[in-house]
Image (cartoon, rainbow, N blue to C red):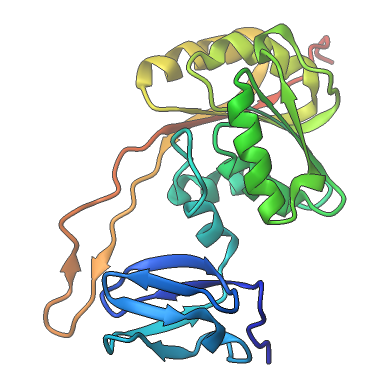
Length: 260
């Protein structure tokens, strides 16, 4: 069994359903509206254990997943939502050893998920025009030990990239259609293109450009997520729904040759 050690990060799930990501440090006390916990109490306990705050509130102590970490990132920009992340990883065929170019680093949520999937043999090349976003993403990646699988690059993706023969090219930009040519040049034959856009007008421009520049298997989806409130005799959907967050457009690079 794995025991909690000093320096470990833990996820508290409180009695009222609040979630907190905390580093275990001796002599430090963690305060919430449901009371406080002396963190050194956790040292030597098992992940999944329960602990009582000074007010009697019972908390469960979990080992954080990478999604828990991403959702607690310091954010300077909006992040890609979990319901969209899973589809992007699947449709992008993301796995160990892939080389991925990403444009629009932002807070680094998607960068982090990509890095965790391509490690230890792959690499993510992440571009942004804002140095403050790159620095914030660097801190988030370093915290999880993933920075060695990512190269953060300051530059305008529309002007081209250094990489060639990459497996996947992902855009999270206001005008993704302006970088379609860059993507085509960087991708290997049959390589995958993905664009994340909040409005349908962006999608139309991007899809038209993809078709013009020589991409095939073009597809756009919107993913909706409805959580259920499960209680015997009273099960129903929750009132608030994670509906529209973005449209995800994907395509594959085709080769411009004479047909046989």
